[in-house]
Image (tube, rainbow, N blue to C red; front, side, top):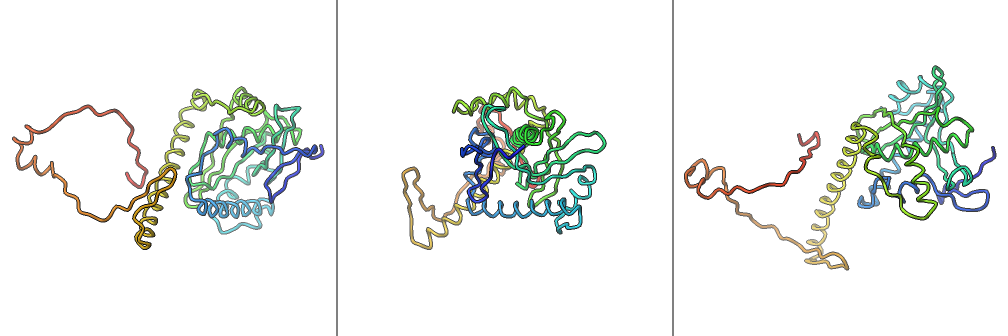
Length: 305
């Protein structure tokens, strides 16, 4: 089969043999709100993380293509080559895959990180290598499910004979292998239909639940850690902004949507109710007030526990 698409690495754009731009898997998922939204993360930090991630992808690719002869001094790469690489054969890295608009409601293209074959079972494995701080189970399952469809079309192989998995190796932290459940075909069809009609895909809650409690908890964990990470960036940015405003003698900044004001250092007076109760228990009971508190969840990271 001749290539249906070509790829421009500078524009990061796929073009069909008919000269039409083909949407990538990443663009498709972002467009319909299935991929994580990193718009609140500083662009400089995103660029730095992307650069590190690209280098580590290249390290893993060199290690696989050299059959283990060229292994970088990276714990995650070493772990992969020791525990995953020996289990499979016929390794492929960064293969461009696609599906045309005849076999699918819309043409889609992308690059698969890694795929290989299990010599014992004869089944294939499609692996997505993630270096992000959190592993977004749901979005990676969507990504690999679509990649599997494109992989089957490009290589003329049975889609049902391929499994999907994620190799999560954050830039700082331990790596782990994660088996993924494919997104149900009816949901995939709904996404493709929405894209072909030019409307946003409406996700079904029960689709997330259908992946099982473990997957749901994993997705919640990833989203919570992502929000906490963004919250940390926001706090750090405010501290840096405060220092710059003080240095520049600026007390207020006003934009079309924001009003930012300097809050000068001050002292705070608080009431020690615990000490008061110990010293004046009889008076405390006279003034204590009981009120209903709405139920909620308490979230702590392992560092906070």
